[in-house]
Length: 147
Length: 147
Image (cartoon, rainbow over all chains, first blue to last red; front, side, top):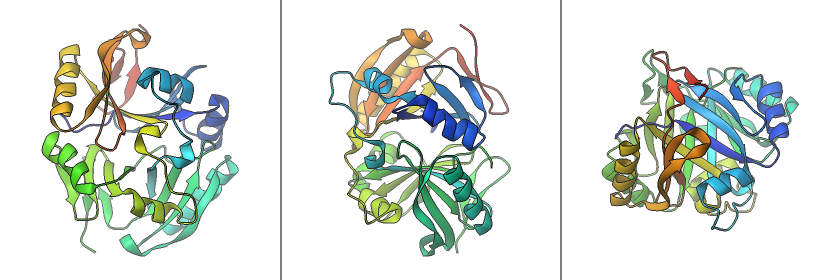
């Protein structure tokens, strides 16, 4: 099988609020923007989907207990940038867009970089990071350099 | 800011178990495979990270209540394939690898395709889907065709 991610779907409580954060606030452009779902391209071949959590629940398995809150989800999404200044800028922009700072920007000794975390309006965690040891080649291949 | 995802980090309870599923079971090749974290490239410029949930929690915000279980996380990851037969094959492979079927493969009228869901050993939901209306161009651009 191919080693490939196609979609990351976030189950959101209020789609207009989520749209306001990602589309109006961050300025991300939808690939498809419908009343019931919004798709945003976030990498070659990869979409972020914003879908009401009740719909996601019904699609995955309506027989199970309802999903828990987004801020308890044991996951994080990361948006890496090219400098510490850019981390600061994007955290500020995310706050203007309706996000909440979970971890203020600070040095990240583990990867000799700089990071902060914000929560989107549902509570999903996004790390904004500058990691000088993680590079992406022109072919999209990610490499870690020894540091 | 760029419209870009760099990492999807899953907070896992037992890293050897998660590694067995993704690396040994599915056959995915790590970009970096350490005792404390495994990174797997899943799209151009995008890594899936498997990281013990306690470490993720400490990185995001050690002051908050602990994250909930993965199977309650209101998210889904999707792996799209090119045919219904491939959905069946990959669901079977995921089960051999240690996954659990959450939703058996079946027609998906919403997108005139075919889908099933599996849970990885932590309970994270992966949709395996054939969606004839979602295409990826040679430049990595995702498009939805009217159907």
